[in-house]
Image 1 (spheres, rainbow, N blue to C red):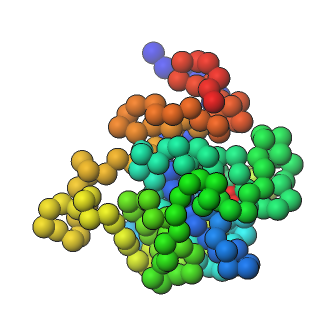
Image 2 (image 1 turned 90 degrees about the vertical axis):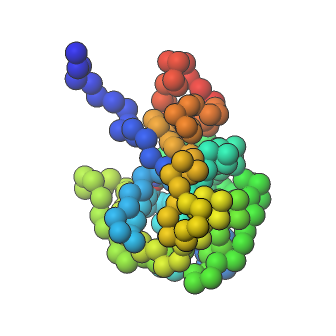
Image 3 (image 1 turned 135 degrees about the vertical axis):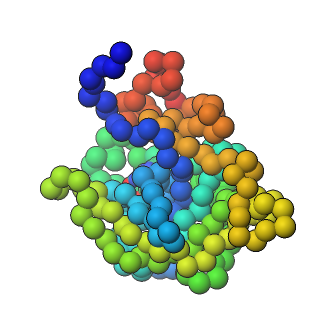
Length: 213
Ligand SMILES: Cc1cc2nc3c(=O)[nH]c(=O)nc-3n(C[C@H](O)[C@H](O)[C@H](O)COP(=O)(O)O)c2cc1C
């Protein structure tokens, strides 16, 4: 039997992407996001227009999409309630966000130079996609506060152990264990992995029906 409901969010499960961008002074910002989908060599990123990541993407036109494996869940959760925006917007203050200038350090992740774009890659991420912005679109209802950023991947870096043996073009799906965000909770290999700071900030009930985090 199906029931008709009004869910708090429609986050049924998408991979977590750590987006690195360059700030105006050349330092790096890093932010987790998961409203991402892919066609061909391009990716559409659904982003809060008040985020530092969005500002940097529009100003510089470049980023790296670092795909987080489930092993990186702790680092992702440490970034969950941080922003690179110095004056934290009200809607984030209410959820408990704070400004952090050194996101890589706060997460315990390391910067490594990119080859084509200026923002650094996340060394610990098994997949790192250097990308440039093609277009920025309005998204959702009027004044949603969300934009869709259309980026094109220009260089792909993959941890060698993920490749189908003997191939340089095929990733072995069995070897790649992406960190998945479902309803603000962290999953890998179909299992809940780690308490989520994001879930209580968004007022989402955890897997057991209890508030998590
Ligand atoms: C797992 C996870 C997934 C997230 N997904 C998104 C998303 O898809 N879009 C978005 O705008 N924010 C998303 N966020 C929230 C951003 O990380 C948050 O807005 C952050 O402050 C952005 O950092 P910035 O202001 O430095 O760019 C997500 C956070 C977490 C922890």
